[in-house]
Every structure is written in C-alpha cells, then in structure tokens.
Length: 135
Image (tube, rainbow, N blue to C red; front, side, top):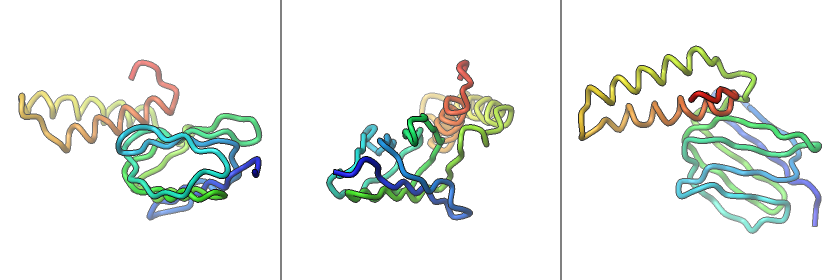
C-alpha cells in the first residue's frame, strides 16, 4: 500500500491544495470521514467544516463549505464552493459574519433562518480553522 494519497481541493476560483498527504479528514454530510492511502472508492457530499491532513508530518487545515469529494485509492479530489487555508482566513471578517448571522437568527425567531444558520456554521468553521478559540 502507498504511504501517501494525493489531495486536491478546488473551488470555482482556484486550485487551493495539490499535495501528497499521509491521512485526510473531510466533513461529509453525515459526519467526518477519515481517509488513508488505498481507501475504497466513494463519492460524498461535503458539509461546512474543516479538512485536516498530514503532509510531510505536518498538520494542515482548511475551512470548506459545501461541495463534493471523490475518493479513489490514490487520490482525493474535493470540489468545494469555498475553501480557505488557515493562514488565509481574515479573523475580523469571520467574527463580523458570525455576529451578523447570530443577529439574523435572533430576528428570525423560533422558526429560524436556514441562510443565517448556514452563515453561522461557515463563520464558526473559519474561526476554528484560523485558530481563534473563542468561536
């Protein structure tokens, strides 16, 4: 079995990641999926969350939102609506988005707003990946 698996994360705007990884965790619609080299083929929907992987022994993290992943024994391709490396995340902007989403949820009342809930999930994921612990 190979020691690494190729990871590619692509958004409509750019190729975010293309590198070999020892292991990968992706946020599937029903929970996180752990992927190692030689994994069985599958296609899954991506939820809002964090992609984490080890490359050359170093942990790397990305915030992602919505999309699909194709897993093959030697390659994982993630097609995401948005994806940001931890160092690319603007913490102040993510905090402002979180606050706005929380305000919208309060205005919406008990029925809630699916758009505001999605925005809050995305802001929380971005803050977590950026290392901001008071998310």
